[in-house]
Image 1 (cartoon, helix red, strand yellow):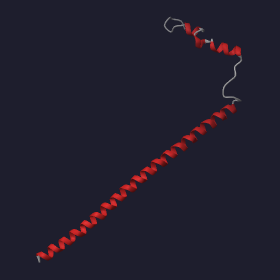
Image 2 (image 1 turned 180 degrees about the vertical axis):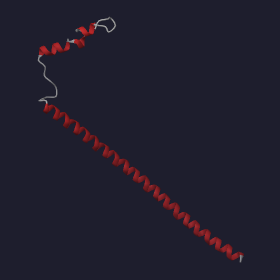
Image 3 (image 1 turned 60 degrees about the vertical axis):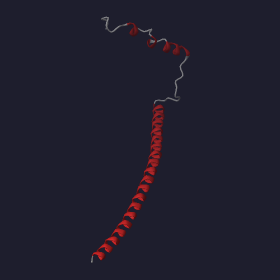
Image 4 (image 1 turned 120 degrees about the horizontal axis):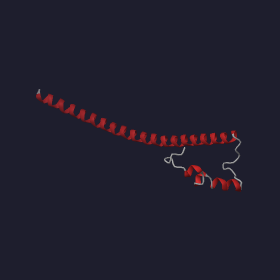
Length: 109
């Protein structure tokens, strides 16, 4: 009776070891598939981010062009006559105006 039980336990052990090996192989295969999927998702994410940024840039430039058209601007940079250019350079931003000389602590308003 003990011999039959020992033989049955040995068979059960072999079956369990075979099942364990199958499960480990399946787990390894699933880990590999998961890594491949993650790599694919990372690639898709980068492609989508690039497409999204292009759409954002296109929308900005479209809005910029519409604003220029709405206000009658025909060029990106304005053309100043030579006299106006000199006034713009020597104006209050250069320290020639009254605001640059007045101090906020000298009592003048």
